[in-house]
Length: 259
Image 1 (tube, rainbow, N blue to C red):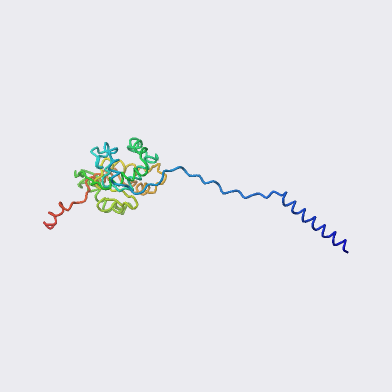
Image 2 (image 1 turned 180 degrees about the vertical axis):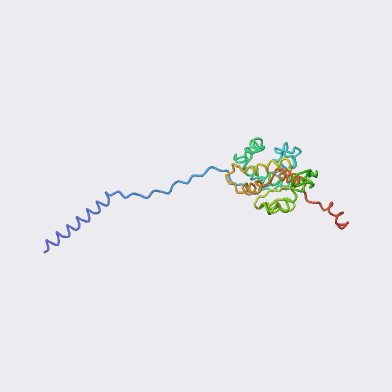
């Protein structure tokens, strides 16, 4: 019996040793690592803009937009009074090649030289400048659906009330009753904007094509502009050009007269 026990223990030990040897010889696959995450190299995010730094950099923009953001050439947009976020965003779109229409070919070489912080600084500076305004066209419309209205009045109606029957919201719902914009969602200021520029942008929105990667805001405008006629676009652009907040000095005489 004693020999049998010894043999049994020896046999068990041999089986254990064989199991260990088998385990050591068996290849256990290691789970694949998670796929490597790749990301484009991007510059460090900018902090909020510095007005003084932006003023020093604004000379680069002066030839087209005017030193204070009020251009003399109607094909260039008015930047004075525009929000910092909107300006910085547009510069980024030009720089990244996502905004390609209009004067993009002129803007891109300048945008390419700017860092994200430069764009923020420029935006901060132009946001502090007082926007000028032009004159709205008050020529009387001679024929068509808007016969006998002053030309700018068609755009004025759309800006303040929209057209419920056609599903067109009032422009002021996003851009404000005085056209000052909304810096939170980066809706631009439109008061006093050059009519030629505003008309071209509205026509681009109406065309509905863009190369922007995040086209949410573009699509909001495209949905509205798609329903506008040539006359309405021209009238809106004219109305915006003449739109500006009344100063306290101008409002005082009217208030005194009971108007």
